[in-house]
Amino acid sequence: MSSRTNSPAGPVAWAFWMRSLGEVTRVRGALIGTSIAPLIFLLGTSGQFGKLVGLPGFPTDSYLSWIVPLCCLQGAGFAGAAAGANLARDIEQGWFDRLLVAPVARPLLVLGPVLGAITRSMIPVTLVLVVGVLIGADVTGGVGGIVALYAASAGFCTVAALWGIAMAVHFRTQQAGPLMQMGVFLGVFLSTAYTPQPLLKGWLEDVARINPVSHVLELGRQATVSGIDASLAHTWPGLASLAGMGLVFGALALFGLRRMGR
Amino acid sequence: MARTSTSSHPAVAVRGLERAFKGGIKAVDGLDLEVREGEIYGFLGPNGAGKTTTVRMLVTLLRPTAGQALVAGHDVVTEADAVRRNIGVALQEAAIDPLMTGRELLRMQGALHGMRGGEARRRSEDLLERVGLTDAGDRRVGQYSGGMRRRLDLAMALVHRPKVLFLDEPTTGLDPTSRNALWREVRGLNADGTTVFLTTQYLEEAEQLADRVGIIAGGSLVAEGTPGELKARVGEPTLNVHLAEGADVPAAREALAAVGPLVENQDGGCVAIRAARGQATVPVAVRVLDDAGIAVESLEVVSPTLDDVFAAVTGSTLEGAAQSRDPDASAEAVA
Image (cartoon, rainbow over all chains, first blue to last red):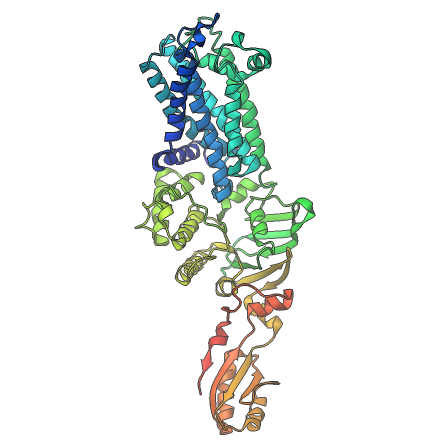
C-alpha cells in the first residue's frame, strides 16, 4: 500500500465538480428557476423603483444600472445556497456516506460542491448582465468593471455555498433548505441593495453599514455604476468582505463536517 | 472457504466497543470480536441489535464512545484515513446518484481512491463485466433495477481492491435470482482473498456465505463460531424414520436403538434417533431396518438451524427463519 493516506486533491475535486455539473445538464429545467428569478427581479424592480434615482445623492441616473449587480449577486447567491440543499439531499440519501468513507481530504468534500455552484452561478449572472445591458444598463466600468462584477458574484456564490453547506452538515436534512435561502435573502436585503447607504434611514442604515454584503455590492457596482477607481476604494473592501465571510462560513462548514459521526 | 492468513494482524479486531447515543442509550455495548484475514464473517442479528451501528463505527462513519476497533491493522479513530484506504463499503441502502451512469460512478469512485484516468477506466470496465453490467454501463442508474443497483454498489466498493469488504445487509429487498447472483459474487471475491464482513438478518444468507458467524443482540455478541459449531451447541441432528403402513414399530425401535439413542415423543409411524454423524447415519439405519425386515417409507436427517441457535441464545427468532433450513434437513432418502 502507498504511504500516503489521502487521494490526490486535483482529480478528486475534478470528479466532484463534474458530478455537480451533471446535475445541471441532466435535470431538465434545473437552471430555469435560478436563471429566470433574478431576471424577473431585474425587470420588476427596475420598473417599480426606477424613479428613486431622482433622489438627491443617488449615484447614478439609471436605476437599471444600480440594480443589475444586485440581481447578479442574487442569482449567484441562490445558486450557492442550492449547493447546500443538494448536499443535504446527498446526506439524506446516503450518497454522502460513500464520500465520507473514501480516503479524501475533508475540505475537498466542501470544495467540490462550491466549485460546482460557482460554475452554475455564471449562467444567471451572465444572463442578467446581458439582458440588463441590452435594455439600457450602463457599463461604466468597462472590462475591468465586468471582471469585478464576476468576481463579486463568484465570491458571493462561494460564501452562500459555504453557508448552505454549513447548514446542511449541521441539520443533515433538506428541510433546512429555506434556512439556506433565507441567509442569502437577508444578507442581500439588509444591505445597500436598493438604495445607497446615505439614503437609508434608521436601523437599516446602521445594519447596511456593517453588513459585508454592502461592500460586495460596491465591488460589483464598479461594472455599471462607479467604474474602477484608481484608488481601488470600491474594490478592496468587497474582496476583504468576501474573504472574511468565506473564512467564517468555511470554518463553520468544516467544523460541522468534523462533527458528523460524533 | 476461508483462506489462510498471511498477515500478523486480524482483518478486524474489536475490543470493548461501545456507542452510546443521546439519553445514554447504548446501541453497541462492550462488543468484542475478531475477523481473520480471508474469511467471510457473518454478523447476524435482528433489526435494532446494533449491527449497522457497529459497521458504521468500523468504516469510520461513527466514532465509538468507548473501546477500540482496528481494521486492516489501523485504528478506526486515530488512523481513519488509513482504514478508508483499505476498506470497501456497501451500506444498507445502495446510495447511488441516479443521474450518473454506472460507468461514470465507477470512474468517479476510482478518482476518489487516487486512481489515474486510464487505470480507473480499465478497472471500471473489469468491474462492470464482473458484475454483469457492461451493457448497462452507459445507462443512468435511476433506470437500474434493485438488483442492478446492488451489483453496481458492490462493484463501487471494489474499485480500489480493498482488503476488507463491509457489506451491510446486501440482499435486503432483492428477489431470489438477484440474491443468488450477489452471493456468487461475494464467494468469488472471498476466493480472491478479500475478507468480507457481512451483516445480515437472514439466516440463510449467513449459512450460505459465512465461515464464521457472530450473533449480536442488545448491542453485545451473544454467540460466535462456525455455523456447524453453533448448531452443535444446540444439539445433534435427528434421523426421522417414517415407517411404511403396517410396519412393526416396536421392532423398528429396537433395531434403530442399536444405531443411536432413541428420541421419544414421536408419531406412531415415525421412529427418531439422535444422528451424531448426520447423513452418514442413513445407510447404517437402512441396513439394520432391512435386516430386521421392516419396510420404510422415508428417512430424513434434521439438523438444528441457526434460528434454533438464535432462539437458544436470545430467546427470539429472526426474520426469514422459516425459509432457512439446514442443507441436511432437505436431504430426504426414500427407502
